[in-house]
Length: 114
Length: 116
Image 1 (cartoon, rainbow over the protein chains, first blue to last red):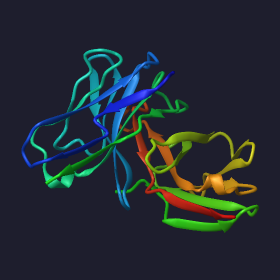
Image 2 (image 1 turned 90 degrees about the horizontal axis):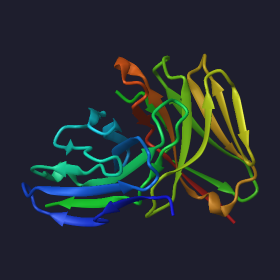
Image 3 (image 1 turned 180 degrees about the vertical axis):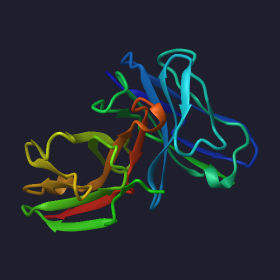
């Protein structure tokens, strides 16, 4: 089944404890992206990747890192999480990047930083 | 600076009636728009899109209208069904700064509730 998977789905952590949220897609998509969803703010893009080893900042990249060493994986790294990073995170992918490309989203990861 | 805005946080309609969800944008360089639908505990899914060379795109019960002069688009659902109850996001790919449409800007979302 074609899908985007994220792990973990739920995570509670403490301030400053490094964590990684994994994202994997099995559709051979070139483009992958991370978003966070917050009440009243909608979805905001954190980072995106147009291909292996090619990443760029979205609108809210502060406090996050990403890497794209393989086509299928695009992990999101929080080196020193803070409470303002408590959010619902979504990974997405699309075959290519372009105005008409539609993105396929993972199920989301709910993160609570204490 | 919110370049894509959905000013109505929620909308409630009766089953069988029309639902109209609105979206405004400020960046005149946007040339493509997408609507995504999101159910609780799931990721968003693509619903319908429109290119700026068109003013209307229809797919079954869903129609998106684009008014470029007003920088406004709307999603019409006719007839509305209880299963349409979800959060709807409009989004615009952004080519600003030579990002080759890598950036995607979403609105805040509108919660649609369709009552039986």
